[in-house]
Amino acid sequence: MSKIVTAEQAVASIRDGQTVASVGVIGWVVPDATLSALGRRFEQTGAPRNLTFYFPCGTGDAVGIKGMDHVAKEGLMKRIVSGSYINPVDPRTGERPALMRLIQENRIEAYSWPIGASMHWLREVARRSPGYVTRVGVGTYADPKHGGGKFTARCEDDLIQRLQLGDETCLFYPTWPLDVAIIRASSADEFGNLSFEDEPLVSAGLALALAAKASQGRVIAQVRRIVPRGSRPATSVRLPGNFVDAIVVDADMMMTTDVPYDRNYLVPQADRHAFPVLPFGPDKVIARRAAREVRKRELGIFGFGAAADIPLIMAEQGLIDAQTGSEDYWFTTEHGSYGGIVMNGWQFSANLHPTALLDGLQQFDVIDGGLCRFAALAFAEYDARGHVNVSKFGRANPGAGGFTDIAANAERLVFTGSFTTGGLDVDYAGGRATIRREGKVSKFVDTAQSITYAVQDGVRAGQSALIVTERAVFEVGSEGLVLSEVAPGIDVRRDVLGQMGFAPARILDPLPLMDARLFEPHEASAAAALADGDPSVVS
Image (cartoon, rainbow, N blue to C red; front, top):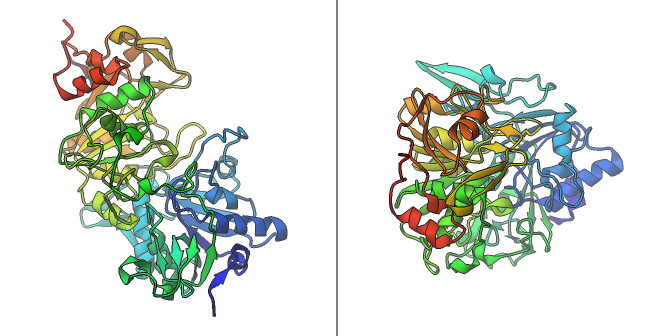
């Protein structure tokens, strides 16, 4: 009997009150057609109702690939647990995602877990253990003392518990069954054997399938094509058909938003001129300065946002060979792509011209095991107690993604981002920074709205941390922030201290200037700044 069905047939058996799990990474590996069919079924029939959705990370971008926004419907969705949420403005409609509106209006139960927990939790479901135990996240927004990952007032159940094991405080995530897993692969035969040859990421697809089957649940696999049984070597089949119940074929599924298919995300051969070139401005200045912290032959992991610009800057400056990539600079992201160039924007997560790939659970073994010694991450807020926030601020509820695990386990941290946001306009004429219009919102606040990681505690335990902005650089010391560099042309009192909700613990005296070559539009000067010299010193 063939397992090949339409998307509508695949979701027809989902019943009221079940738990449905799926995964994508922004637009990558999203089983979009199947999630869309589930949303349409509810709109047309009013069923199924009151589902719990489990997404280990943000599935879909709510723009070109809707992903979990397809099922963000009151009545269909009772509860969602996700490692990250997406909140862009759709450039065509001007609207925020439907899921974000449900969260902001308190119309569903919304929980946010660090992605490391949301990935590793699946392993515990698959082996029928009581739950997942970790020290990562203690003292953060995931800790019951700081909200327990609850993003709406409707959340009453404590999905995360605080646990004492001997002298150590840990977080405990109890397991529950998954009734349906909806995953994506590239090819399937009629038995359901799955391979992923067109996908630059695997994420948690394999783990979701095994967790659902251990729960006596069903697995629906969306693929691009059907191939004859036995036509692929066993080494290319990542999930046996024994664990697949239904196959949905979508021959036209996008690789990710704006990318129908591009084999450059699958192969290591590189052409440096094909890399995107960042326009000159504050983001480029930040990435140039942060790139000076990258060391040779040290595995570096880069987070979403401004931090992801760093490898592109290094490629632009010729530090990565056009044909062979680099044996000296080792790049990865939380989603398991190794080598090549970390991309930014909607193409973040899958590296261009990668050399190797791990699945999501293995990658968080790497991260939690401290193998990514250097980490570059963005920040939304940094407060007087040394807390950094990217998980919840203003009306945005993006969650932590992999940030908490990455920050907790790296030896060297660099946080990147503009000093203020909301209309910031900076001019760098003549190698000097001039704030033409200040942003409406300062990122340096007295109290962060959410604690994604306690940076100062990490420094006291042996980490090093730097904050790089377009106008100043701070070191995080055990006593607090130390202003360690300032851009030429910046008035420290007005443009730095006057834009902070708290005072730095210390200002270096004399205060070094950021290298003026970082502010030159031409890459040759900036490359020289990266290659040599210490910052000059204010006399």
